[in-house]
Amino acid sequence: MTSEIDKAPARRRGIGRYLLALIPLAVFAGFALVAGKMLYDQDVNGRDISAIPSALIGQKAPSLALPALEGSNTPALTDAAIDGKLTLVNVFASWCVPCRQEHPFLKELAKDERLTVVGINYKDRNDNALRFLGELGNPYDAIGVDPNGKAAIDWGVYGIPESYLVGTDGTILYKKVGPFDERSLTQELLPAIEKAASGT
Image (cartoon, rainbow, N blue to C red; front, side, top):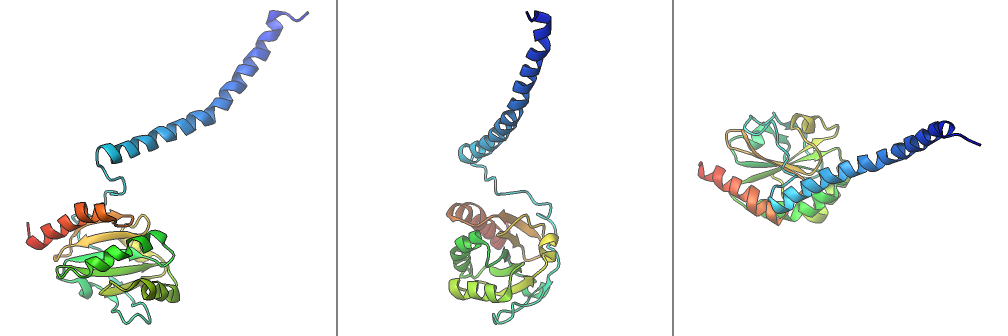
């Protein structure tokens, strides 16, 4: 007959296996709590989790010397293209689905006489970028090609689309990670444009 002493190691092994099985569940629960908190903050407190702070806000914009998108009949994106102008620098690519979603907003912004809209075409094929603009329209006053992503690194790009509002003095005033939608346009970008245009 097995004694209680003989059963103790078996019980400990069983409890150890049970605790080991709970580890993935605990990790998942932790991630779920963090994600839930972020969504709660966005929905209840009105905080936009896509508005990632940028070390560049308030700093001079990185220098631009990017070649033109061949075949687009749009000038290259250089410092001269934005010098002294209130400018929205938009990082886009034909393979980026959210870029397609925000494109109508960029076309509307391009009609604003206070603003110059320029694009950095990120890690894209020339023919695909031309097809993208041919299909959806070209809102850009200048386009620079960034085939290896070096310019995007200089600008601190997290992922595309991303947009930067650059003041007439070359200072980055605002950054948007992700596509523009009606809310971010009316509550964030347009007030920033208004403030910059009025000089307040």
